[in-house]
Length: 617
View 1 (cartoon, rainbow, N blue to C red):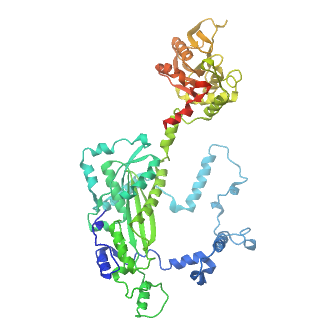
View 2: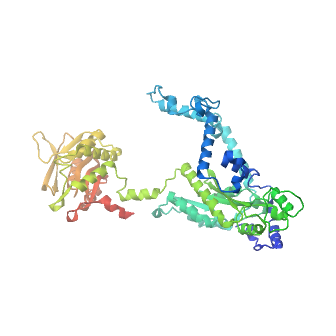
View 3: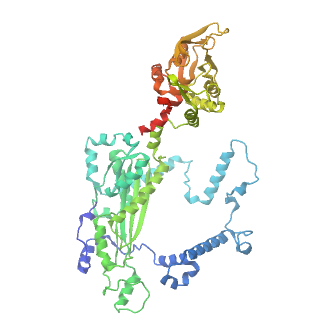
């Protein structure tokens, strides 16, 4: 809203007096030179469209050119451009030709470097990048930001001076927002704007806006996909002076964004939309005069023939407003009865982003015949500007599309995206594993009696990467089933492998031992590790094929404790989630990782936890 929107002279009708009264109230916004198209634009467009057919005026009085004619003309123009750039060749082709515009140093085609020796040293990539950067700078200097690195103080001082000058310009703007002034003095507002974003809805950043409320749905819908939540929208801006209505839309949008940021401390997106009506062109006014018989001649586009008088100066004038409101419809309704339906109007939106350090402007524009123009057309340029702003901020702030969805998927799949090894092992378990009595899972076809070495190597690498930061010095496992995963893990972690025996060997004179129970081999079993293989300086990672009740892993942890060493984690191939082994190990305060987690084996059917995890979403 604005000062303009407070004026309500009523809807104009075809009565000239009513039109004059309506337009008189907006006389200060009348302009005489805001022609939205040059005089020759229409003729130039015709020439560009038809090329050689441009002199055939009959083409414009009859049917439009066919698709084949347009394609033929486009091909002709492309051929002409190629000849201009590369010269004429044999039979009109570019082959064998030359062009004064061609510079071999600027060419970057694959064949330009064919046959050249490729550098094998580490600087080859850097040299190639330097070559391309130099080429870009030479060909497009106007698009490169050439900062003076040798004088950073002067550059900083110059930037500060420019900012101070710009702020002084904005200081003369008098628009105000009652709600923003309330937030500036309300003691509860600070906590409101500093509240965390709603993570349950997928938001991870809190921003604020200052745009027209009808466009808020578009803004929220676009930015919510990138985790942006808007704390509030300040849309009650009022112009303080008449000069505010004549400022540029960039200045107004920037002023709003900076003011809102100053009060809330949050990044702000603001907007301002302007509306223009072009004047009636002099040649059209001349046509109206000739129609009345004041002058003779013909040729210019005529005004409506049902009007016997020349349009008044107010009707013929153009209009420019830097804000959208009821006045837009008032002016349109006043001008429409006395204007050609094709009289051009323009809606132009400016969207500004400001976060205290960076300011970005994006635009949307709509040119519309006055016959179809109304305030609702503002949605079109605003949608364009909002979409452009989203693309710019996606690059500038490294925003990720639907990051919240990926996070939920990761949480549902036990905290991370399934690795290739996990997917392959899951596939083998579902296809080949069997459920035996006492809920024992038989995986002998790929992990025990017959080992898929390639699969175990991939799983070993996957688990090794998870425990790399724990810096283990040794791996401890149980012979013999634990060796299938412990060996590749020891290879990738580059540490020795120690395994516990279930029976004493003749070479084991002095040992650490611990008892445990197992569904597969029975109760009251014992694990033995030679004291020569563990010492108090070791950081030991426990590795096994299964985690069921956790009894065998607890036995290994007791052995590590007896040796005075430090346990850094437990890694297994398959975890029986339904046996609660993870819970029994939770008191040791070490990480537990598994490649695949089995949710249940009810009725002889193996169900993996990852398959059941999507109900968390």
